[in-house]
Image (cartoon, rainbow, N blue to C red; front, side, top):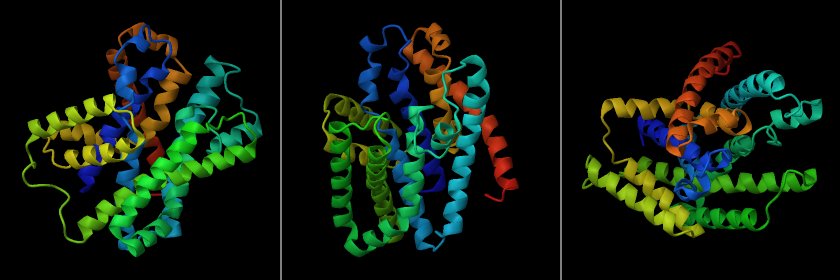
Length: 332
């Protein structure tokens, strides 16, 4: 998997992320009766991010690049972007346009700034589990090298099914005591290991000299797109947890065969490069804030397109600022 392919997959993931969250905009008229809540069930954007991260981290691990300074700088850049979004949309714009909506008391703000809680925007729950996952990655990779590819895949399936069952059957509300919330956080961290392992296994296969792609499919874009469409249709119809595992792997595997026109490739790469900032942003722009204005567009597809474009544009500006701050803090 090349850096370009990784960016394209992350670009696809953020588009699916925003499609997945479209039903959360409760002000859209007639949304519940449309096809979009059904489509959202087939998105699974987080798994794509985890697989790409697992691939890249495993390659870095084999090159002995994963050190504590490396992980601290990587995490520092993520938190810097996150804090920039919170500063603008919670402590500045939010306090002016929506006074009283966001609790900015010191302890409450601190718990949200660290990612221990996600009261300001539920969509940012992923940050702290993801960061903790990266710090556990070397331990996971050593285990993969020890037990081999087959048992690693079995472990990934078990982790995804077990943690998925725990979360779906025993939902942990933010209103629960902190101890129970920390247990929930631990479950989320373990859940991320599933996608991490699959990405690492793909990297292990590549580093051993084998190709991830099949020559028969390479460059046959129409056939690949037809297969991707068929996969999404089947996933919408079959709501079984174990299907998710094979579905996500199949989608990534098919996308690796695509040979996109350069303009299309650049669009997806650019989306991928800004995907994490867009992740932090998109919930504030349509769910936590401005949802009454979003509803004026009426049609869900139009809302999704406009939401993506506006989020991308704001993310581009904030990325420039975030990168400048990161260089000043020597996090780059």
